[in-house]
Image 1 (cartoon, rainbow, N blue to C red):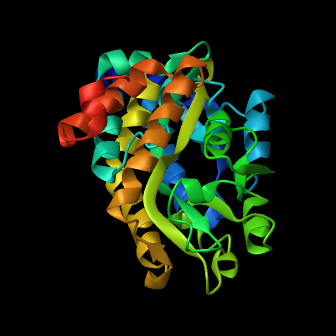
Image 2: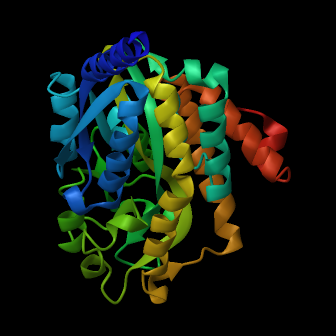
Amino acid sequence: MRSIFTWGAVFCASLISFSQAQAATLCVYDPGGKTGDYYRMLEQLSLQASGWGTEVELKTYTDEATAVNDYRAKSCDGVLATGVRLQKFNKFPTTIEAIGGLPNYALLKQILSTVTRSKGASRKLVSGEHETAGIISIGAAYLFVRDRNIDTVSELSGKRIAAFDYDKPSIVMVERVGAIMVPADLGTLGPKFNNGDVDACYVSAPAYGPFELEKGLGNKGGIVRLPLAQATLQLVIRRSSFAEGFGSKARNFFLGQYDEALRIVQNAEKNIPAQYWIDLPKESLPGFDDLFQSSRITLRDSGAYDGKMLNVMFSLRCKQDSGRAECAEGKE
């Protein structure tokens, strides 16, 4: 009889433990809504989360600003949004999106692995009550132009470029090339470009189809095949709403999703008609590298970028290609 009572106590204790698991709500931005690739990733996360001590419910948003505002208003306990929208919560992880900081996907994978597995880096993912609990690649951001003859820094002068008015780095870069900034967000960028209100915009390949950017490209436009930045979706949570260790487990989950996220991006890049891609002449590249570096330094010194993250990315770039001009200068 004692064994029956013992097993009964264990079973009841398990039920109590399960019922007492923390419940949390995540506001998930995905332009595809509940059918979107990134929402489906969060569904997989929610299935695993109960084993980590937190029951997770998802609320989907196709408007990013609303999702972030609901998180600020504590209508949800976490939010998935682009890094550029989340800069105010923690500059260290959002600096991964620094202008020209990671020129290829191999370097992006290295930095995400470092941020996830290094204890020192993980500690910097906590800022006050907020913690960055995951980072998803949504592709390199490219410059979309309505006139494909624009292929040097100097030719951007005087052009109207759609830029996020909540993104200080993009504003700095537009000003540095002498272009005219036209405020936009993810909801208005496509229409402004397609209607000719701007001469250029920058987004990653997965936005090409949903934003119908082929309308703006027409017969004369193109896409400059030079990564301006690595766009990401990042999950920020309010730590008190989740079980201890949730953030670390979630970051490892998202790192495990890297190859799937990259597959989505590369498929989107392949699906863009080949005639739109513009490969820059080699003599144009130093001008862009100088623009990127000077912009990063300005943004670091003004407090918009995290200096330690910039230094890690600098080290990775020079380890991959020690012949880069910046490697001998060591400015970052």
